[in-house]
Each structure stands twice: as C-alpha cells, then as structure tokens.
Length: 170
Picture (cartoon, rainbow, N blue to C red):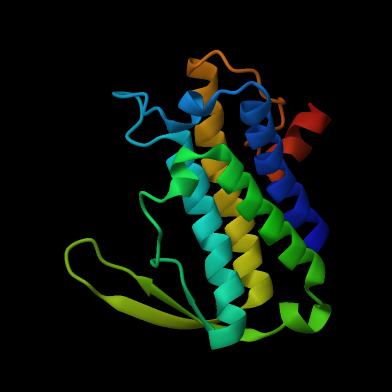
C-alpha cells in the first residue's frame, strides 16, 4: 500500500518537475475557462491538503479534509508544491504497519444546503486509499488541462490503477 502511495505522489512530482524544467509556471496557474473553473495549481494544492490532513491526524486522531489552504502559494508556485510532495513522500516512507492500523475519526461536511458535519470511525490505511484515489482523480483533470495547453505528460498520468490493469489486458 505504501509503495502505491509513493507511486501516486511521484506522478505529481513528475508533473511538477516538467513544469519547473520548462519554466512554465503560467501553465500551472492559468484557469482554462470555460472548460475548467480552477487551475492545475489549485488541483495540486487540493491533493496536498488531503495528505497534510492525514499527517495532522496522527497527532490529533481526527481527519478533517474540509480544512483547506485555498489561494495559497502552493497554487501559484510549482516548486512549493514539489517541496510539499517531497515532505509527504518522506512521511509515507516513515510509516509503519502499526501506523496504518491506527483508528482515526473522520469529520466531514455532508450537506450542500446547510452546515452538517458527520463523524465516522476510519483508519489511516483506509484514508490513504481514499487520498490516493482522490489524487488520481485530480491528476486526471490536470491531464485534461495539460492536453488543452499542448503539454505532453506520461500516458499513465491520471490513470486509475484499475483502468491501468484493464488497459494492460486490452
């Protein structure tokens, strides 16, 4: 499981390294409206926020993905996002099997018409599965943005593991 998480984080690192190498920060910051309502940087920040929520949860025992750092410099500067992904990667490498079984409480808003927060028991392993899947989902949107911007990315960027398995058999 941790290896797969590191693979997911590496996809984000590879994307950011392409931007940095090509000195293409504007591609990261631009909102391609009307097709999209946010930038690739906003998607990357959102991914990072989820992993940072998990890092914080090991101290508090509470996971709250609704705590976000909107409009942060991570959305504007690919190098800062890359630095955060390196931090997350190092954290993942430090986890043990005992850490993965740690029971946590997830707090999340569940209504769009009123503020209603639900709490449910979960584990770090379960939340890593969610965060990885969530990251791949956002990578897929970033891949669509990159395609619109004529930016070449690896063909596996933003592809879900089950889809990759299906494509290998096709």
